[in-house]
Image (tube, rainbow, N blue to C red):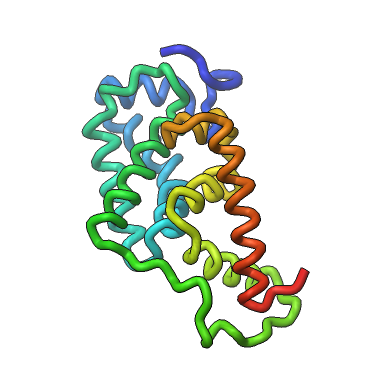
Length: 186
């Protein structure tokens, strides 16, 4: 397995040896891998499908991970491979359930929101993200919330780095517009 990390650790903090052992079927290594990555996957699922389904989908992702772990060849970062599985699971779930997006403008959202605390701003951002198309939201979440590089996002989503950049630009403009409609003042 080629090294895609610094000092034998991946960006999730999981030693490469643990990943190798997990790929080879070591049960304790798989548990360590799960414990190191479950919060990140859950956070992504929460933001993609909401709180009601996030835990179940997180478990589904890890069932997929352990089912397909032997296909991880180490040609990419483990985290990239993991996020690819998670993104696919979230998008498949959204397609099956035909989850509605929140309308771009709703009378109940017309109330003015004063310059707010971090918690209120975070809630506003969640409302705004719910109104953004899946392909744009996913790029934003992977970059801004998960800290992935353009190259990693491109690999996870199967798009070019240029497309990542243009989608990030588009999503930021859309978020700014939606946040303004929700009453956020810069």
